[in-house]
Length: 379
Image 1 (tube, rainbow, N blue to C red):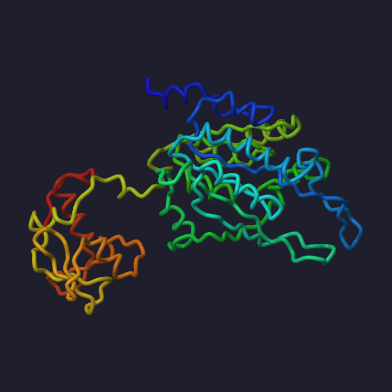
Image 2: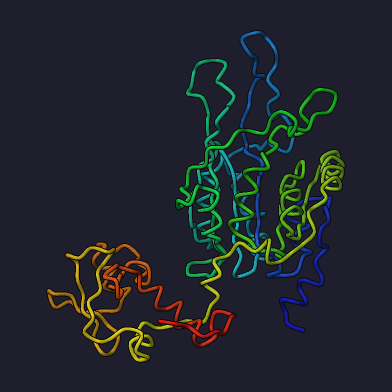
C-alpha cells in the first residue's frame, strides 16, 4: 500500500471533527488532503455595537472566537493553524484563505514565511454589500482570498477550462462579483443569523471546482455553518470539517445531511482539460511523419505578415533569422508572455484557408490511437 493510499484510508472522511483545529489537524495523517479552504477568525477588533439609521442593531461578529489580545497573539494563532494545515496538505494540493483588511495581509505574510507560494489573490466583490452605517469610511464591498500552493514550483490542480466555461468562454479574472449569503440560503434560528460570517455557496463552488477533482479530499479547519462541506458533497468530493463550537457543529451536520448529490458519473463530473492528459506529441514528430513539410510557411496568429519557415528538425525560423520551437518563438513574438504554439501558429490548407497546427496534431493522435479512439483518417 502506497503512503498516499494509507493516509487516505486513515482519514475520517465526510465527518465533522469537533474541537480545536490545531489539535485535530495534528491527529490527521501527513500529506493526506488535496484542498484546504480556510475562513479563520478575522480579528475584527469591534469595540462597540453597530446600529443602523433606524436604530436596529447590526448582527456583527461579537463571538469570543474572534477576539484576540493583540496583533501578536493573532499572528501566533495564524502561524499555528497554518503550520498544521501545511503538514496535512499534499505536495500537489493548494490552500485558499479568505479574509478582510483586518487580517488578510497579516495572514499573507505568515503564509509566505511558512513556505507557501501564493498563486493568486482573488477579490470577492460583493454585489450587495452591507453599507457603512456610520458614514465614516467607504463601504466594505469586498473580501480577499489568497490561493497558494504548498511550495514554489509545486504541481497542483487548476481546472482552467472549467473556470472559462463559468465565465462565458473567457479566461476568468481574479475579481469575482458574487452576492453575499442572503435570502433562503442564509441559515437563521428564531429569525437571527445562525452564523455571522456564513459564506455563499457560489463562492465555494468556484473554489472547489477550480482546484480539485472528484474524489479529492477537501478540508475546512473552520467549518462554521458547513458551506464548504455542502458544496464538496454536491460535487462528489470527500470533505472533512473541523469546528470548535458545538452549536455550529449541529447546524452544519443538519445542513449537510439534507444534501443529496446526483448519482456519480465520473465523465460527467470531470472538468479538467482532457487534452492535457493525452500523450505528448512534439511538433517535430508531425514533420518527420510527413503531416507537414520542411520549408512550409507558418503564420503567427493567422497573420500573413508574421511568417516563419519550418526547419527539418521541427524548429521554426523567422525572416529576421531568429530560430526556436513553436512555443519559444511564439513567446518572443508575444514579448515574453507564455505561448501555446499549437494554438497560435497557423498553416495554409489545400483550400488556402489558415488552420491552427493543432489540427495536425489531432490527426496524428487519431492515426496513432493516442486520443483513445483508433480509426482511419483521411487527409
